Length: 273
Image (cartoon, rainbow, N blue to C red; front, side):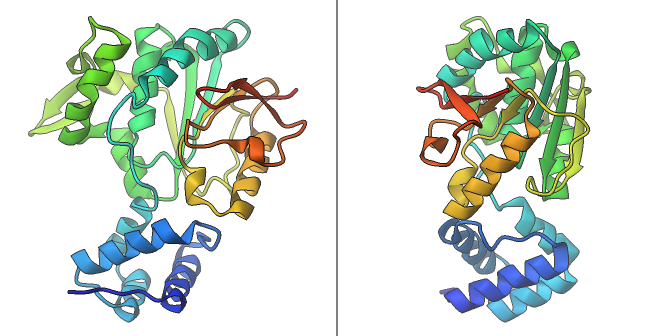
């Protein structure tokens, strides 16, 4: 079936999502989100905008399915191994010299960066010294992260990355299998708290000194990108670190007196005091 979605129909769907969930996606980059909606329409019984809006209003399971795929998930753990090496060798050491690790992963999605981070902390005996918050608009995503579920494709794609970080390491050291499904070991997740919230609306119990927010602002329009930067500035503690990833460059935005570049190559920023 050839599914189409006009701009006006797209806007009607976004308004229906806002009315039902209070999640405002009007400043989300339209191209990627529209493609996701078309894919859902073509792969489910909700194959027209009118029927899709009715499902948003009446089908809680399908509504969660929409919210869980707002962002594309990374396809492996430790994607961009050079970044994780930099985090290990510089960022973590800088923070733990003076403080405990207080970490936030907004829009955590299915948890690839979250799992990578807790494994890295465990490898360096820092997990017990860390407080971690994950947040997302999807309860499904949060539940999967709290369970530690990891798909077989991500496991397979992660083997070489783990070896690039440590030739003697093995992804199986950090996972276990139950009923044919693979999970991150439970002891790696015990210092994590989950919040169901849009990052723009969340109120955290502490100001994090490390925020991992990789490749998420590419889904925002220019106005929301600046709002996200302001939110992060107002949330991160003075001297804290923001990791945006190599696809993001917030230097093009208003960051004067907010952030300075800490590592240009890996797009790591440090908040001014």
